[in-house]
Length: 193
Image (cartoon, rainbow, N blue to C red; front, side):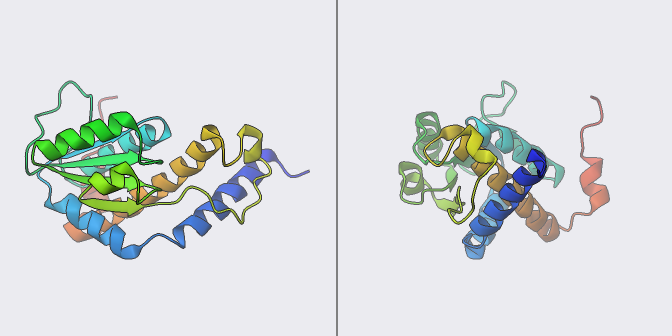
């Protein structure tokens, strides 16, 4: 019998491949443009989205941008030249919506990363980057042990994997446009811990 981790890796790969066939390259480029226009970038997601959002904020700093995660006590104030990147699989997470609305009221811009363009978050945002959750053509033999398309554990795992790839793709796009090298990025990596 095939090992569970080998099967799961194949399921993540097949799902990601199917989902990324539908990602709009123009939306990714527009998202990169929107990020580059911002003076400061604030990132927020809840649950899986929050874990990967924190990584995204870290990598934005590594390419030389000023990025923060919301709820960090040492953040500077959000200003009208700033960008709030709101990550919500459903596009209906109440905390995300409340803070996206506040960012707009403060004069900033909002970039939504969601699987639902027509969600409340999608409608509120200045730019929307749609990333799917599930390629329904895939047979999830191992991942189905934690749920199916009705279960948040299952959907969160797949969405998290997809946004992880999406965020690193955007970081690579930004690094190229900013003229960053592996050495310049590495020089900004944490070294105290």
